[in-house]
Structures are given as C-alpha cells and as structure tokens.
Amino acid sequence: MFALLVSTAFGLDRQANADYHARREALSKKTDGGAVLLFAPLEADGPNALYGFRQDDNFFYLSGWAEPGAPC
Image 1: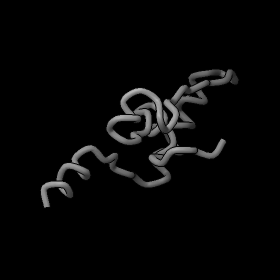
Image 2 (image 1 turned 120 degrees about the vertical axis):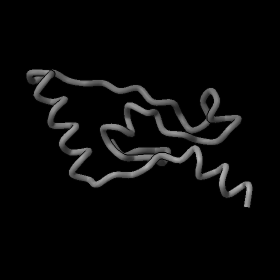
Image 3 (image 1 turned 45 degrees about the vertical axis):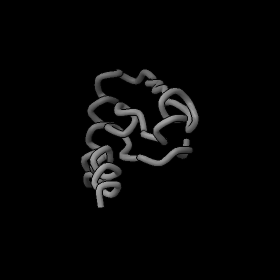
C-alpha cells in the first residue's frame, strides 16, 4: 500500500483537453505569429534515469501529455 501512495504522490493530474487547448491558444496570441520551442528531458536523462520518467512541467502544462515519447 505504501508503494501505491508514493507512486501516485508524484503523478501529474490530467485536466480536460479544453484547458490545455486554451493555454496553447493564449500562448499563441502572446507570440504574435512566432514559434515556441519547449525542451523536455528524454526518458533516461537526469533524474529520470534514477527515479523514473516524469514529464517536464511546462510541456505538461501546455499539452497534458505525461508519457515519454510525446508525438510531434
């Protein structure tokens, strides 16, 4: 039971797709037609190699994608 509590304590809470879409739309308006480049760690980079994969907070905030290997 303890392992279950620990694994869920570090999870990312998924919201409705409309929330992520609205965030991307707001960012798009701020860039005035420019591009945004987000960097996220690979599955085995940095602490992910030791503790397991965790999606970059900024990427997750805009996409809601928590798994490694996000589609481009």
